[in-house]
Image (cartoon, rainbow, N blue to C red; front, top):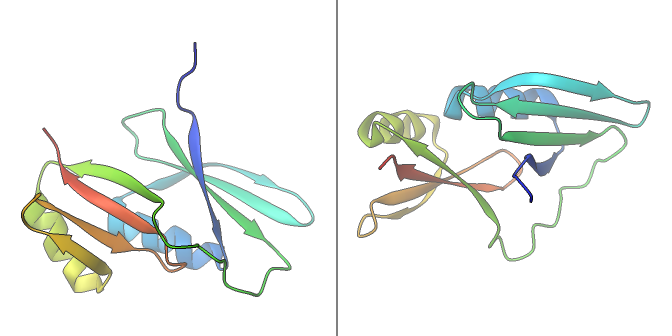
Length: 119
């Protein structure tokens, strides 16, 4: 009855976030909604219909309270070594769990993204 459509992160600097998601995960902007007070930028991976919505509130200056940081987005990759090397170079790895074969990166606003091997 339902299918996933998108997930939202609120961001303080849209250009910085667009650059991060492109460089770190290859996500590209696929559409945008601009209003006087906000911009919604939707990012896609070019393979699935799922999108990440970045919401930029134009008058927001305070960092977002992400609570205890237990919410995260997860993506898969065919090449964990190459992905890890890229994220290590970018300095965005925030947690590693070698026993499970996964790690997390942190975006400019503090959101965590889990990197999983494609099965």
